Image (cartoon, rainbow, N blue to C red; front, side, top):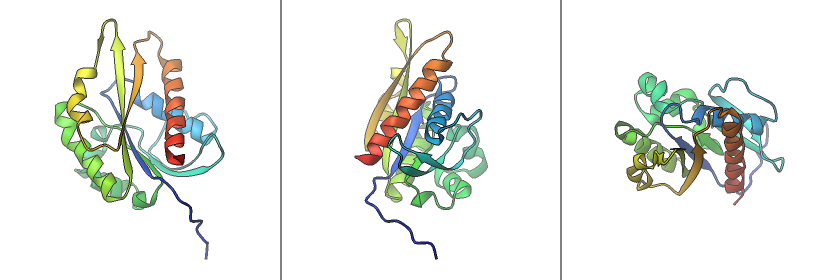
Length: 184
């Protein structure tokens, strides 16, 4: 029988928030690549053993696309999607489940917060603040920021004609933030 190591641990459920074409998927792919220590060309949802910058393994389940894109239609609820994809999600140290932010998506976000809290996770809002010229998407977030998050993070994503490197850097930064939060 394999003996499990017991350690004091914080458990996180991170919800990257933005609509399509705001960089979520590229950031998540970069985050996973950083945690795996090798480049991932296409981030498929699944169980991952990621490694922190300090060498500590982190048991994670990572969704690569927003809940609304595939999971909602296939499972009908956030908890159904979590259970249907990973029956052990409640035992993981980290779950990353991105979401869209339109008004019609707010119930989904509330379901994420409720499911995560019911499993003992601290839930982190990772709002991607997309800016261009003199505008931004900040107006999409006030009702979302009022929800029952344990922490709220802002990921600044200024317009860039060639955003790939910027998005990869933001994904690596997000991985570092997650690892620091898990260690705190």
